[in-house]
Image (cartoon, rainbow, N blue to C red; front, side, top):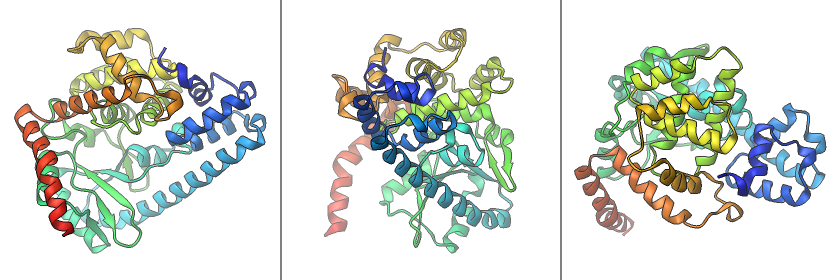
Length: 363
């Protein structure tokens, strides 16, 4: 089982293990692993919800409380930024649609309690990007300092423009117009995401529950880097548990995944969420995905790779071959995001030209 080296952390997060059953030695590892994955504040609120904080040793408790204080600041800052966005979007007649962490928080998803994030992700129709970017510049947002090549990379090939940073508050926003690069092998229909979005607060929108699940899966399993893979998969687990609290149609998820050309990342998210967090996903749902899309490489081989990158990035959880797995999945991610010819050109530029550009600008 992939989670053996951090089973206690996983079990505490999902409620399969009670705080009173964890030894002080185990708590020591839980704190270190939890901090490395940025989930300590999430653990705090989940234990609070289960009324188990009283069973946490005092020497451990202050770590959890400190993490919860930090997460509250993230929440306040996020809500403050969203209030600043509202008049800008309203003046342009554009929906303010949030993605990922900010969307989970504003949608009041149970899994979002204690969630931290470094930027705010927005989804905007491509035709409105230029107008929105110009309007935001008047409010202190500026494009991050990218080279001419990076600007073209984002604007011509990617699913988002370069990050915008506020000149005073230094907060970061990522403006997306779809959820995968335009050059990617999979082609989700962006208009379907906008059509299915729902208002969660006055003037603030998020993706539908099913599209939120598909985006969570896509964000993790079509990426090139896995620094936050544990937390991102925990998000998926939490979103699944949230929809299961209401009437949920698994077939609707599969149909939407097929319609959006996202069966591949959905298959991986379902598979590894079950393996890691014992998420209550029927096996036949995973099997249905696998019948529609089978990995080019065997599922067992992909398990070897993903088992090593989804774990907390802490030495206590590290498996042999982790560095190699990261490199192979880095290459895989780029291959899925770009056709081969463009990929070779891009990697050549990043390896040999970009370093020289940085040296020239520094001089």
